[in-house]
Length: 231
Image: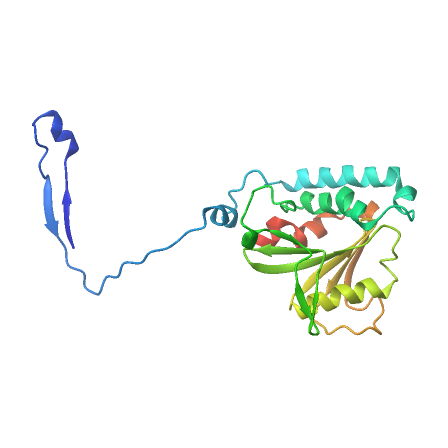
């Protein structure tokens, strides 16, 4: 490898800085040059430099405590027939995942292929295309699904929402996923093939009521926060 080193400071003392050094070196084995294309936004996200989205555990817990208080204040209204799933997602479920550090609304303006959270992505389930409500990703890799329901749906005992979530996650080969209407949250082990005859409790490994979120936030955070999933 032939190289030169020029003393730029020499300009102060002579008209032509010339060459301070010319040399060559031999490599004991073949030297190959490689070129890489780097997605700068994805790179910043992957090394955790996205300061806008970074949250401490205490900040996250404070956010969820405020959200719980807000839900409790008008709980009966939220459980009424006129309050839709879309309302719950906008007012409670989106902020729930944002408290966990996820960029639900793509505020960092990542390219579509690198969005952290994809809403109603397409998943093949028994030869049909289905759309989980939320897909949480690292780069392009899916990590878990979340299926949302309106408050008032009996997450604990109704087997249909659980079967729906487990089918999605099992088909996508995701080990864990969650089901929530914000009032309740159920976590499922999705490594086992689901059956429409399963009870809602089948493969359920954790269950929380919304009043429990602040006190048990560490359990939820360690499984589903952006920090936990990315580390």
